[in-house]
Image (cartoon, rainbow, N blue to C red; front, side, top):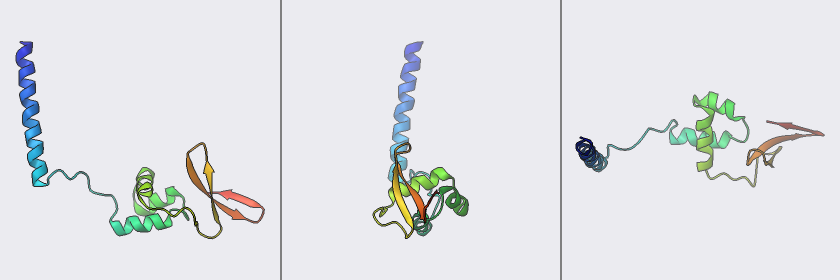
Length: 109
């Protein structure tokens, strides 16, 4: 009985692979749509150093995780942050943290 079940399972797998190959030829397997249009994602990347990620997520109607997924794909110029902002390494989180510098005061955002 087990041999028949194993044979049937292999047939199901073959049919599934054939169906997926046909769907790929038709262009039906494109995956999930992006949360933001290209122009809105470019705008998000421009704003990322000036605003906290939670504010960006709320403004664009997406989750913070989605914000973080858009940022690594952007070609970010970390050498020249906006005026009054310094990027310092944070070893706990393995990323750069933007720090607004004021006279005798450092205020993290």
